[in-house]
Image 1: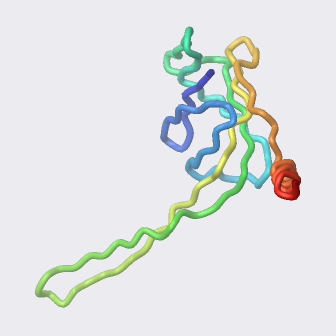
Image 2: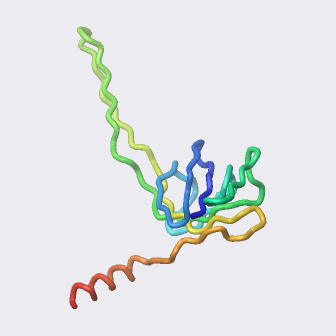
Image 3: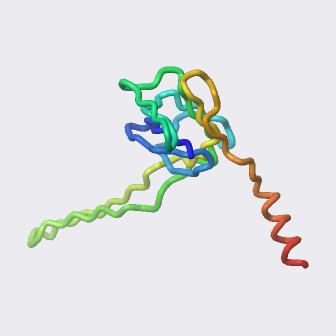
Amino acid sequence: MSFAVIKTGGKQYKVKSGEILKIEKLADSKANSKIEFNEILAYGDDSKIEIGAPMVNGAKVEADLIKNSKNRTVLIFKKRRRQNSRRKNGHRQEYSMIRINKIFSKDGKILSEAENVSKTKKKTETKKEASK
């Protein structure tokens, strides 16, 4: 199974085709749009690995943006004892949920591609099986 190490939002992610993951929010992006990651640090499979110095030029990863949203609230509570001083604050971090479609090598060849499985197909298949 092929993988790639991409850099986005100040973090590094090891991704495989077909994988769904949460990353830092991508600015100016709409849901159901295509995204290209060009900052590839490494890619390969079980037998061979290509490592960049620091990036692999020409390699890229294509993904679909599923949605932009916010995480659950993280509460920040500060209290100074015996001062009658307390402060409560909350934070919701924004994220983008993406699905990795294709991983390209530095020569432009497709290393791995995700299977196209739509939600409507899954629903109709499960309904047919339930009626039998």
